[in-house]
Length: 114
Image 1: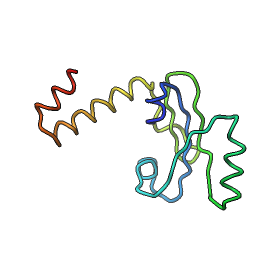
Image 2 (image 1 turned 120 degrees about the vertical axis):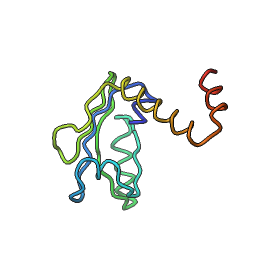
Image 3 (image 1 turned 90 degrees about the vertical axis):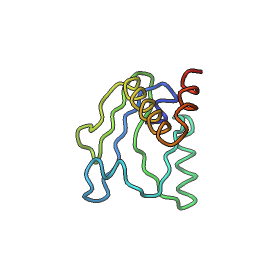
């Protein structure tokens, strides 16, 4: 989702379910992994490079112009289906609350006002 927030775009993602963790367990697991975004023009070359190096990969979705985030697990109905702008606001508010708890509250408030 962070790619959609910073890119101000829409994403549609389907993450394969690798065990019986369900939506939340799959989306928030602590498994090592990497998500990269590659333009369509570079997709084939990127896949070929990973394949030739023996690195496993899974295509999980697409980015496009727009204001929506749709995330699903294992091909099921989306478990997240909301506007990018709405989810970005929630993300930023949550980040502010975490920072407020971890730092000097006066400094956090000054930072927000700037």
